Amino acid sequence: MIQTLCLTLGVEQAVWVVLDSLRKKRNLNDYSGDLIEPAVVRTCIKHAQQLLSQTRYWLHANPPDLLKPSA
Image: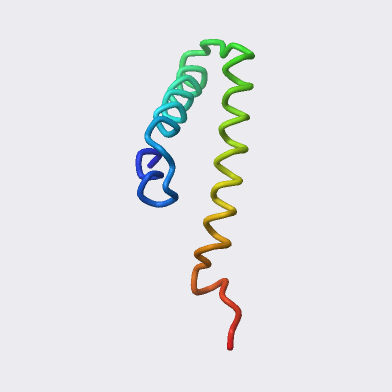
């Protein structure tokens, strides 16, 4: 699903590669208890905030039919 961000929101490949890498680290933590370094957590938060901002911008520019004001 992360790989489709370039098609859905126009996220650059370099960004979704980082997001996918962070997802894999999270999965390791979930399933094997591997610790995640604080720097990685900060990176993840930064990228999540940027993705949220980009998603909000995209939704504002491309509102789904259900969110469009009725005429």
